[in-house]
Length: 600
Image 1: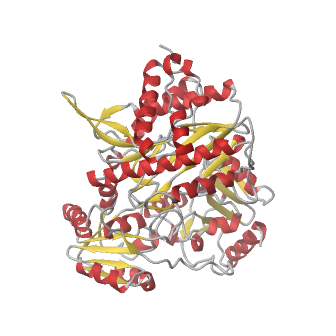
Image 2: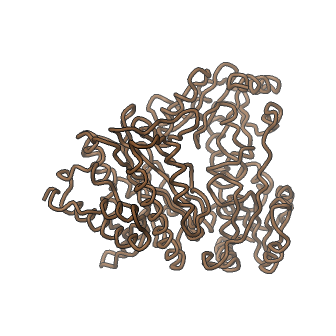
Image 3: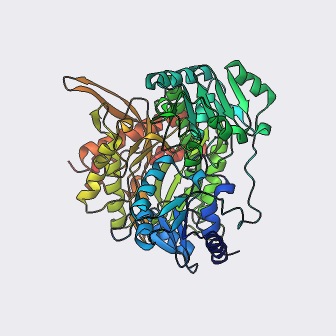
């Protein structure tokens, strides 16, 4: 079935149940960023395969709301489908909540699967529709009846994350969460977020693309814990190991009933941004503490042992990148290289490194105009061949037993124009500015976003995505609670703290021409104490040269040039022992100092 036929079947289901509209989120019962095929309803209905987007369907309208990362890609994917691309963030485009309130009539009902809607989002959407006299409903499930051959839920085995890479114990993780529960006066903590569950129980899996997590729910009590998971996913031996830490393994399907059976006199702690309405409705009559999952902050602040593993993992990742780029520069013009080839060769290079498990997200290899789409994905049906005179943007990463990596580099494939050098250097200045920043401990991440944007703003340009996201430890490549973004809501949970690993990735995108993004991962570390308080700074973790052929040295200050030269010396010193042959020669060539070319 094509999108028009699928949307038609959804409209028929709406009409049959006297519903005015359906809202389809890119979500699942765990509110994950990457979701199993079973829950990829929005993609199945539209054909658009971006990682984010909200579809609204009425009797005479279908629209997909996407942010600026996907504006151009969505226009290409949805051409001829009859589905309108709604550019979320444009001043003249209302958000889905407002659009529904403006375009439906009082008394009409809107359907949204409550198994995919967070409590936090439900509160906002319900307020908007209530004001317009409309009702939001979550039953029945409309999708099963219209999606033939819907994929099954994943059934991959779960395994233990073992020492030396697992640097904390299950008992220690659970005790830290129980301490937080006690501070809030809660006897129970209910959670469904997969990264929190995997971290808490020192378990890993492969149910979700790129993230080493597994489908599960959990209930944590003061003296015991329950893990709800499909029985065939976990071995008897692992069940016994969990039992030794007072963890009972139960069927995934039993979670709802177990939550509903919690004692009426007790208090439940839950995270409204990470708990679905369907699950919350099972305990909404109990006393509640609504706050960030305690494990979010606990796992975001890596301990010293984890940080040492990450530093070593960055060396392995950097060595793989040296191998790849040495091959790329030699093969360019001699072999046929496409964006798909880049993904294949990068993954092969990483797979030869110790502890490699999988990519940490779908590689973005984007040549020339494709680079202007921040989350572009090459496919067998749509990809570019890489030829002379252009810019190739590569955003990639790996999951290793000792850490998670995420890096973006832009390299030339021939002559670099003055305009391209200008854009590249402006982005580099923004990345260096944040790399050198010092700020008081407790500063929320959104408040330091402008440090990276200031050089771009001075040049009259900007970028539509955030500057930085948290990164897990052999965990999700995008994690909270920190976020360096102007769109993030400032709260105490957003404070930058020692031990946090965050991306630093300003960009600049010229639609139809090129895109530039330079990304390193940085570690928040103490910067010393003054009479004005404790200060923090960043240690750059990523180890890979930044291509100086794309730089206009005259645009750099002496301080910026010194930072780049020092970074390249550090990269060379760390990676030389792990490289040989062409990779080593490439490393030495690409880490040569700028010398006296920078402005004073």
